[in-house]
Image (cartoon, rainbow, N blue to C red; front, side, top):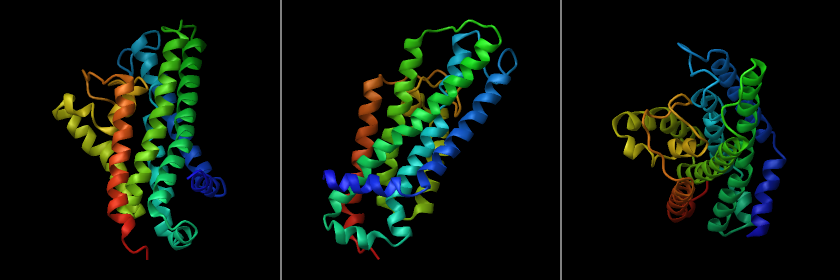
Length: 257
């Protein structure tokens, strides 16, 4: 199993996919945070950075990075079928369940970097605008560390979810569309209908780990009562396991060509 995980990590390191997607996550996150910070205060996009709600909104806007972590997970599993490399992979390791497990674990490990990039940018931008304008930071380093831990762990777990989904659907385009449809469509609709259900949705729950609020980007439903930190982590692990289990018992047993 260790060898299979190392093989998947080697594949990731020897392609430009990770660098490109991390760059996209960084650019997307930076743009959002700069716009939020420059338009904070009364009548702005977020409350004033002198308030906890305002600075929290900027620092917790790591949602786009975590969404791309899920997309990354999709690409490393569905890419085997898109580029017709699945045959070689399964010749090297005939146990398809082991291959899928290795991909999910590798995706989770590398997915952490998306959360790290996201929180590094949101924190840098938020604090730069706050301190640069002569404001006092409204909360301590412990709060920022908690948001950082949530962003990093959430990104890793969503990458694992994406890897399972990519193996289940196989079609890279369809799986990526499913990710964006869930994050920007289904979950937003569910949040508008039932906040009690929304907290169990993968992207909403991951955002709450990073301190997300109704002012964050993507925004969370107003008045959301999030699950405990450990509860969200357990939920995302369960979702990743469930999707991967279904893929292992259905998709991976089909012909690979």
